[in-house]
Length: 413
Image 1 (tube, rainbow, N blue to C red):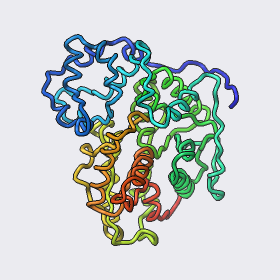
Image 2 (image 1 turned 30 degrees about the vertical axis):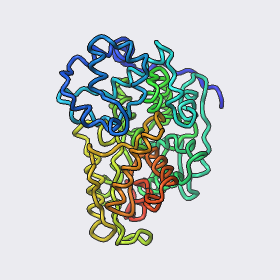
Image 3 (image 1 turned 120 degrees about the vertical axis):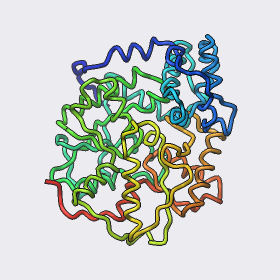
């Protein structure tokens, strides 16, 4: 790693940052009138004693310090199922994020016992946030026939995939398929950076480390500006949410300068524009039945007007005409079941029970499950090693699945 020069400060929403660190949890929860719908839909409550409405009640009664000191909020999945049913639109997951920041900063409550993989991946993100640290990524995975550049209009943010491969197999096709597709559809080389930083999602939600998140965001934005890009494409549902919602929230002009697209949206647009079409696959048989696992960050962490979950289904139903058959699981879209672990917090027997339930549901409707969250894929596949009855379910990333059907008819521009 090499030193980098300090860049000028960006247009940071300082009022929001101040509120995130100084407001009491009670002030954030004051609209709650204890209907307990959150507890009724809480996915974690199905496998352990965890009652959001009771936690909120304790905070409203003036026991915020006791709640924070107890560490109970490290257990929350932050899946946002509760927000879907809350009549007052109280974002409990975001309040838990603020609480985690307070637990670490005020009470020095480190989540060591809750952090998966001994905190390695969270530590990588926090290390990248340090002022003088600049990663140098290996790009030898880029297909030889694909040209990439350091400057251009479109950037593919690879995310943390390169770091996961040391512990998890089978994730390389996500980035490779994406770059291959972009090279075929775009006339100009796309931007893939050697000094790409983590988006900051995990330190933001997992540890509530707002300072590290903001430093990572500033580094990323400075990279984007130097590269001259206009569009950011991601294959990670967490990265998509972070760039689409959280960066504009803290950096006032981010949304004006950069358009954020998930690869699902990109493929959907190119299909509607006639740049790509879908044809029968030689690898995936027509009699295959498959489902789609909606990641939490796409199904419950985006504005209601965001229709990415409908776009992916429109693609799937179109494939029904000549390819494998898409079947919905009983729990889908905003009612999707959580994989049980977000931001590397809480990988334990209880979260495994949630994953097992989800894979049983997927197997009942097909032989294959497609999703668009690398963390979901990693943890679902890992669980398959423990249970024979779900071991034969194929689990694929959306890019790995859809590239079996994509035919590029013409280039953009």
